[in-house]
Image (cartoon, rainbow, N blue to C red):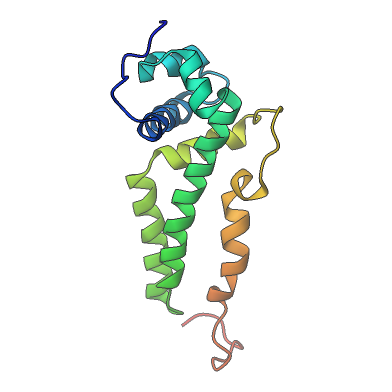
Length: 157
């Protein structure tokens, strides 16, 4: 395929379409099983256009993972902001995360492929996107600690 079939879209719109398409493919197949030409075919663009707009396959994968991280982080931040120190609060937090996974199934699929396989070795991974829970949960664990006014000498209701 030598020409761009979607020349009427702007570069930012085209970049977004490339990242969305690559997200679906990487989530379904993993990094190694998603060749660059498959991404090009699925977007209707030639490989040179994709490389010009978002970089090579490894660069694109990092952009996909960063977008997945930012989407997950925004959801977690909203859930933790509404957290209450009771059983209902824990249930709402769990429900919020399950709802997120049902609404954005590509995000957990990407992390599963990422954790089971090796990332591209030619690029440095930012710690935040290599393990999303390592950045959100440690600072948020304090929400699970009972307020100082509650005695912790007893376990259970």
